[in-house]
Image (cartoon, rainbow, N blue to C red; front, top):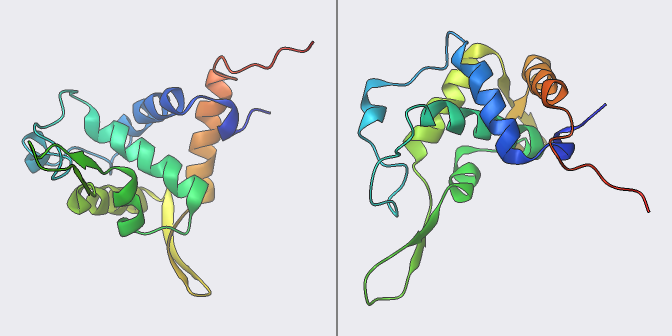
Length: 149
């Protein structure tokens, strides 16, 4: 069976985003139509369904790295800001977007909050893992097949 690492991340995220569009809890808030995704961005996202893409991407990150919190996830979506003639400076992504996406995924039952020793954060639930497995099974190896010599 193919795993998450056998499918290219972009294919997995876009296919999972299509599945998340069908869910009741994951939906685009009204304020998200005009918001930037971080302080280093100059414009709001151009894609219409960017919220579902971000939700699927966050679900994948939680699956790979859980238990993980908002601050660590913000670092994945940050970038360097162009500050003109001054040197570039790294800024983390928007925390509000990550928090709301995590709340929506938790409401849908795809992730849950845990404490493992000193680590607190979100991990994927069996329901969330089955959603990812279903998407992986549908899309197969995603063009990353190894050829034998």
